[in-house]
Length: 122
Length: 108
Image (tube, rainbow over the protein chains, first blue to last red):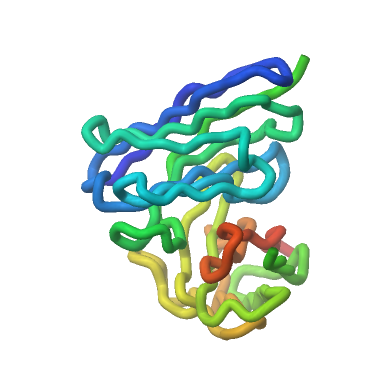
């Protein structure tokens, strides 16, 4: 059974950093592109970042480019999101999601974790 | 940047009725559109990809259509578990995988 479990969320002050992790199981993690998607409380979905299977290609939403870095460790079956210079508007539930297609960044996302909550406030 | 506009914002229907949800793209995205369902406290679930293909395990009452800029998700006969928020997502153009703002299907 496929499973994605996010961790690392919490309350952080504006300007500080946080690193999110996503542990995968139940599928061949190294075969698939992976993504981060966020959802502010009571609002809609926003794609944040994606990485292809071998980390050759990493893409970011304009709202986080230059502040966030996506990475993965296929040996550990894990996805990461390093978030720097956090702002109040980054407050959201952050989901890890698996790409439907093998290998490349393509979308859509056929499996999601349950999310980890990030709150940015002084 | 491609903008997806979903309508209506809220759809009030009774179980057994037909639901028709719209998603319009600000420019052509071919068939690279997906639909998701999200229930309160749950992660989104993929329903439809490439405009009209049902994802694994999705009931036949869910169908998608459209291409270019205009897309439709149809639920042929609403079941109690179908009342939720539905999002469309484009996967065909950069930057990124834009989502629509969502349509809430609520019980009338």
